Image (cartoon, rainbow, N blue to C red):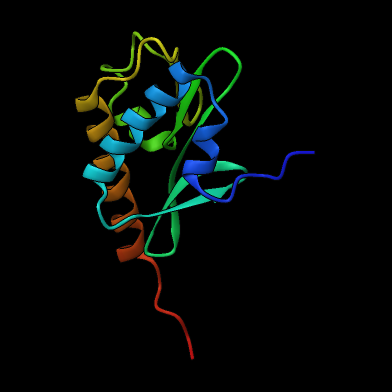
Length: 127
């Protein structure tokens, strides 16, 4: 049995050339839009944490790739996502047709803003 990947590079090394190229591009755009986020593996998928909390993840499946960004960014940018295959919290795309860089940046910045808003409305911890 092959060990589970522990880094994004290890995850990407197992993919087809087309999937790897699509997800490397996605990774580059995510890193530019969220430079303070930390890369990790979560639920066996490449993921990003910001301030210790999960921000987003992405993955490859047999016939598609997906950006798991959460419901809020998808709702905010629903009009721009009309031509894409979406689920409750993810955008799916064929590796041969990656998501546009500008759209990914918008989704990521919306997700970061959502996290910041959640952080500012949380009650302070009791000691």
